[in-house]
Length: 483
Image 1 (tube, rainbow, N blue to C red):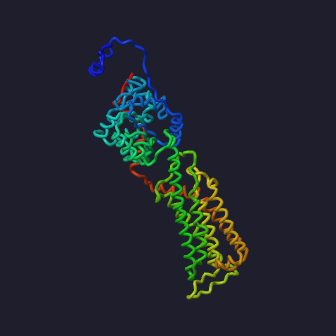
Image 2 (image 1 turned 180 degrees about the vertical axis):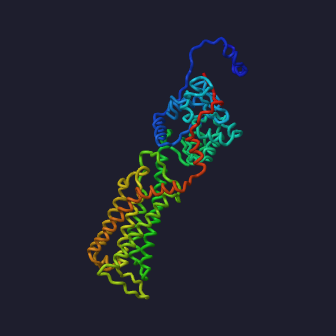
Image 3 (image 1 turned 135 degrees about the vertical axis):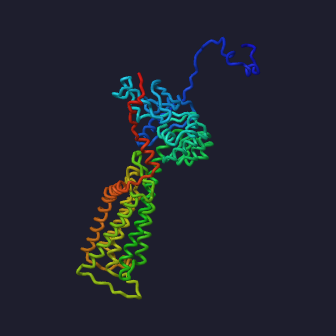
């Protein structure tokens, strides 16, 4: 078209532009996957973390990319909610329930022998377009909408508002939603998600709590690992500080029985020498490099946390009570001289309870230093191991070989060496029992309590039933027949 100018080109019809042309070839644009995408998707899948694609691209493009990166199995059939199967024209979805309609192998309605597509009755995913998602939100029943949310793996042609709504609807059925995006059209979803990760330092980073320096999704695994480690660390520190207070309360309660108490320097030694370094270094253990399928509890007052806390309180109190009773039955024991005008600190009960409690403050820190599957082993936290070993040795020396100035400063009284060794043995037994109960006894007891009470959140139970539901074949008079 030699006489074609810009103004005429704006008025040109498509039929005119495409007539009398010579075919030279197609121009194909390909946006290749990043090398880290497929491994990250596999890592999340192995950790049983559900992954959903929410994009503005065409639904067929989204399905192709999902299969290439491993988001859905390449051999897996994917249904698009336009009531047709894009992999098999004879396989459709029920427009009311969104269940796959079975085609029986005998090709008749006289009773099925084996459903040809029975593997899809429970194992199928949905690809949903934005228009269909909007219709489902506005007009579909709650059960059908929830089924779409649970089975939907791909949401394509989604507008920014629809992405935002998708996040909110997933949250409404009990999901903890993380959203990863890199554009301005993801701002609403990033802000609404429980965890928003921006892959761009432009507009999306304003709405997202996390911004990745790299432009791939590898940061998602890192955020989950660090988040789980931080959650477990917070709970461990909470339980440790609670046990620290209870141990000291138990010691003081026994001493109050005859108007005694801990000395001033004993309080200072516990708070400044024992507790402060432990509290500083206890939470410095790094996240475990492997993402576990098992998820940590997120409820501070859950049965698992309370069982551990109450159980450790009983164990520490039991050992202090046993030592308090045992020392009063020793042949060399002399009752304290009660003086209303004095603090009555220099007594045998004070000495033995103080020495044992020094080990208890340290052993509960060891017990609550949770390692895999959420954090690295305690041995990887070298400052914590070093300070713990140092404090254990310091306390052991104070028990077995106290110098004169230590005895005077801490207001300790003389007790036989054999009983000092007995205190060390009691501390070792205390540590062993606490570790065994924390690792094996208390988790099983908490699980039994959960099964006994049968308490589960209604939203999570409903979601679980939807995910695990097995669709039974229809009755004979309602069978769908296929050739």
